[in-house]
Length: 438
Image (cartoon, rainbow, N blue to C red; front, side, top):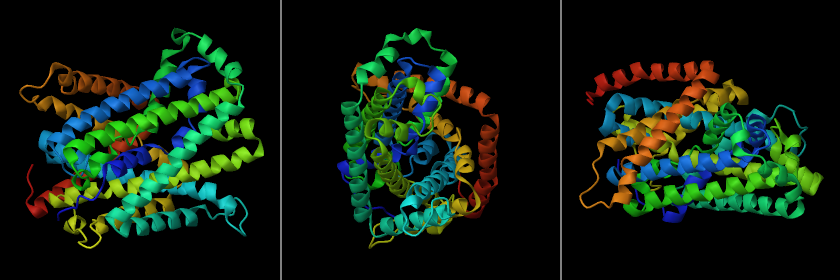
């Protein structure tokens, strides 16, 4: 049941980047512009959300140094709050945190790939078969071995990051930037509707979700005391830079009024800058981002079920490690199977709605565990921020986001709560069966 330390620092950083960047950055900026209006907040919320994600990454770095175990939130909550909250975080990861987003990403991959499949007409109903095949293909690639899977994901993520930076730079180069960005930055930050800024920040935080990816594979990263904090922080900083750049490109390429409320903001921006060729470039960019996200989630998620199984709170076979491939193969295929079931029975929008605010609940609860850790003797005053001030700020801001989200999306929040409630009898079943105790 021992994992193998085969993942380098660079692969760890790219795992974080690939887990964060998904389809959201290409679809939400127009909605955010509708919420905050033509003000500096159209870009400012991405900076503010990035700083909040960076605070979370710094807090997880402290936890990773104290508890260098696989499983992410599950591993940190178990010694801090006991077996039941830890189990429910793993249960949420299984159904909401990884399997559902994998299914949604695969369906989106099918939607964007379908027009390029030879002999098929767009809208011919091949989206779900393509989605199922994409999950199957990623699972096969990941199952070839820990080192191969990490190298594959690193290559795809580097390509994706290069395309994003190239897209942003080229759009800014070909666009009347001062003409379009001028009215935005001439407005005052204080003139915006603060309720709109809060709602926009909720969308942004979901766009940054995944900054904690390196924590899930903590037992497979070389030199974890040094490399896990570096991967969490450097990966998050890289994504902040990419997100801010691409939003400058969006609003520099076209007047903000033409993008307000638009879902296909990336396509509109590319069309304004490159004409008809822009649409194909953006499709390639989105397909690359989705594939990178699929591989990242397929690597990170199974380590949660591995950790739960090792603690006898999930089926024991999920903690088996293939000695040749150095992977928890059964956990990988277990997650892929659930994602494929979700693809078969649900639609893209339904899966997105299902992936609600429950994950924010557990990241907030996890960061609050730092308050139980005493700074080591001799810790310099500036570093004590990591133990008290930054966690308090992260928890307070996330509670505000959760309250706003819960009010605005009551049905989604109730669905997430029902999913957690369904995990309670499962927990007591395995606890009684295996004699586990908290």
